[in-house]
Length: 399
Image (cartoon, rainbow, N blue to C red):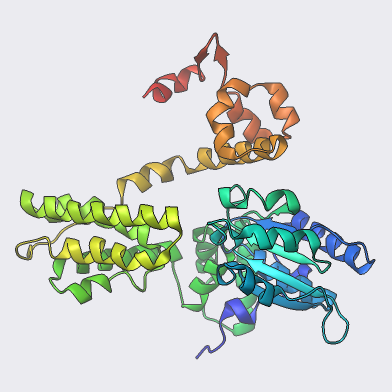
């Protein structure tokens, strides 16, 4: 029986143990060495998707430098007093070692102007500070970005994840085939944490396939039960977020429910759920999640007059199928916009709005785009005042 979580047991002990993001790790090490030379540096803001090793890299850096790590989740320091208590003064640790202050998931906090105290700390604190975020261009980070040195962490490549998983399989003497390891590595989408969880859970197939099977079962519970408590608990143990599961329910209401009245009631509850999700995004008040689950699960379950005793082939959300089909190009386009945005000091959303006005070979060189990015950028051009992509894509863009 396995007791220790792989995510903890195999967490990196030094920066070289962190897989992927070589350039980012080198910048972190250089930044830390400057502090050791008594040269005070700007705080670091490390950003990138969840699960790729941002926090693990910070912890590894603290161990390697023999610094005291003061780790605080940003959502826990939403007021000035809590922030001051968490960070403390500029003093060193008990044995005169430096204190590395980590504010994790900073884009999940300070949404109502509470960043005044944080900006003061970032400007004045003499100890090394590192912040992590998923979205560097979150509007709530507008006052924080200029005060920090920014380092991007990207998704880890499949080969690197597969090598790590194989080392763990050997060390733990697990009966997992190499082909299964490769499937897990490919299915995690660059998320190292997800891959480790899939491996430890005994996955002998892709994590995404197991999760999909669980989703089908959860959808079936919502549609087939008339018990409110059973319905709202259907998605509790799923490895997908509530918003994504709600899309599954929305897609399958017309397939499961036959009476127009049942469909109308179900979609009315889903509309209320959507309103609550909008309020959560706007206010960052996560207490409203209980209403999202109540409306999208319980409301839909209780919308039917009686259970439909039939087999229903539940469908994957059509929106996600469309997005999945274009994932590769969207990923390249996002990379283009991020690079241009970093050069122009604006958001990637602003870049995409005006990309057709700027697209040319000179822009590719200036923004240091790679071959795939430069090739995609050629699909954008200007003919007079008309946005005109390449001929093969013209009809698609018009639609």
